[in-house]
Length: 518
View 1: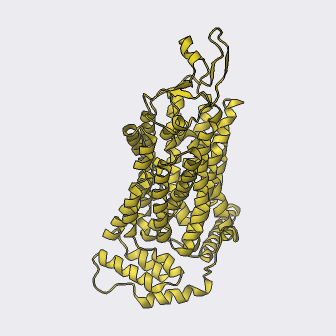
View 2: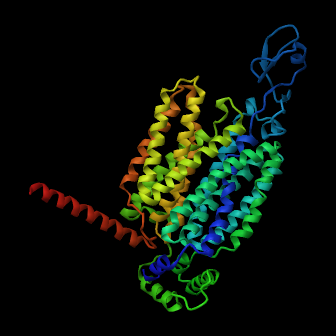
């Protein structure tokens, strides 16, 4: 495509790109706070059954869900909801646990709330990917920002757990729509040579959210104020992102040439190019006429599996995204087991991911995306399997292994978003990113169920996590490398690239056989 070549060749990391990246990175800094918010809003304070008999005994039963039967004996019985519970609020002023008594018989509702949030993220991937391919990245992104702000505020004002779960579900939908459209819009406006750097910056913003969460949660120990403080900034992010124009690539595919040219001229003015531009309306129309026979504006998620190359890409990416999230969230939500301050552990985990993300960004830029994504996921699985040999009482060593695994998985997410965006063509990019993100969130939903298997065999969850990560990383080796490659716009271009790669491999094998015979 001539126009695409001009865009990639003549676009530098100019004032427009720098401002755009800043505005698109800003909302990502608080994504991690919403994903992991229940570490603090649903923290379980020490508690015991409220009972006059317990007060008389001047000691507490071993099980916080029981109370003494009488003044004369030490016999106990299960505590009923009518009795209520007393909580030690010295660390947390208020959490959803003590406000709605989500302990003992109602303990499952804590996990239900987090699972419904992740289910919302999963539904968001199904809904907002195809919507972005149909109506545009910018429009859907702005709607998601408003949805996060309003639903987050609604959650902070919830009168009961069911209303809270509904608002959290809707927040999760907005979070997923934000991620896939924010990253996709940034990739489509960023020149080829700067994509790894932009992806790296966006990955750092996702990591920063973990540290921000610990700091804000330490300052605001009431869950309602914490929820509110992390939701209100999205109104500001809405104003910032309003400045970012719609993707010119998407506009061209939808034959909206005049708007595409308007956006391109606006970018030229911001960059200081006031004279004649290398991109003209005639060039845009010629490009549109040249590609019009091969374009299909009615593509659906089914087209992700319709052709061989797209099918291979989608299946391989779905496996890898599922396994990465499957393992990551199991480790991220289980930080109380180390016996340290959860504020401290959250900060440590957030900060120690950054060096590995820097390393992965360098390898993605100079060695290749495929190698980086594969090695990050494969090594995380190997380390999880190696941690099975660590004794249960060596908590610091277990924490070290967890830090390494989370670091490698965080590196996978940084490069995975870049690699996914580069593999899919423009006409199916948001649909593909939405579908793979749906599989990612499915892994997060299934993860707590696997963690529960430790009640039967303590080593079983780690064994499952390690095997799944290792096995699901292997199909990545059969995907094409996208380093120094332009973004493709149509499914036909992807198929041509796949056939070309197959022919090149066949030629190399034939040449190797001939050399052997000689």
